[in-house]
Amino acid sequence: MNARNILNADLHCHSVVSDGTLTPELLAERARKGGVELWALTDHDEVGGQRRAAAAAREHGMGYLTGTEISVTFAGETVHIVGLGFDPDDAALSQGLRDTRGGRAQRAQEMAQGLAQVGISGAYEGALQFVGNPDLISRTHFARFLVETGVCKDTNEVFRKYLTEGKPGFVPHRWASLKNAITWITAAGGVAVIAHPARYKFTPNEEYALFTEFKAHGGRAVEVITGSHSAQEAIKYAQMAQEFSLAASRGSDFHSPDESHTDLGTLPYLPGELTPVWELLQERIQ
Ligand code: AMP
Ligand code: MN
Ligand code: MN
Ligand code: MN
Image (cartoon, rainbow, N blue to C red; front, side, top):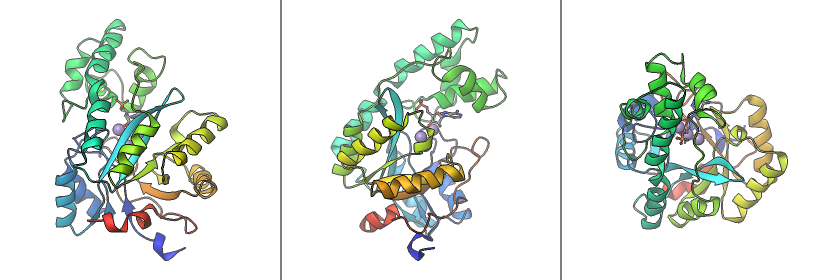
């Protein structure tokens, strides 16, 4: 093991500012308890929690990198691009995130209409009860409503039966372009990271295109160790990181004590042969 990789970094998680259930302050406390030394809060399409997260990290003596997770449409699929270490006040990034959030309210209304057609009424108002940020209503909030009302036993079942492609509550949506997301992050001084690559349903050719275009637009890292990857998948993406000369990131993708299988700070360290993403961001650590 390479000493530079032995750092308990958790660079992916969500607060009530997007679809997590904890405040930035409670997440920071939980991260510290989990032994996290370098932390980033990466709310979907939002930087509204960054100041609170950075302040809470400082209180607990953790290093902090600013973060977000941008929704992107690539080859007809939704891909998530994490940004780390950017200036959260950057005007172009803020506008880009605002535009990306923009379609969510209308999409949520259409999701509720789809659910109403299979006999689930009041889902829009129901989901809203779980929303911490009215700009950021997501499928997760609908999932929590359907669990609370007893339609499904857990959020996984909701996604499988109602919220994924071809299911009644699924509404196709066009998010940011890959190029724009990478450019917003990079021009704001940050590093763009491909989030949980094993989660996408790409053919090998499409996946190769994603990595190639990501690099071409200035992307510099990929999540290798994440709550979304099996041990086999971590090995595969460690190899991809080397093949594409990308740095590697590590993050739990923690959302909620009741829903998330991987808690903050509990993942294995990054494999020793990889360049950790924090090595590219030394001056951006607060
Ligand atoms: P949205 O941005 O509204 O499309 O919602 C995407 C979010 O839904 C992701 O960030 C996850 O938090 C959550 N999600 C996606 N798929 C699943 C699943 N199968 N089980 C539980 N949560 C999921
Ligand atoms: Mn989420
Ligand atoms: Mn994601
Ligand atoms: Mn995430």
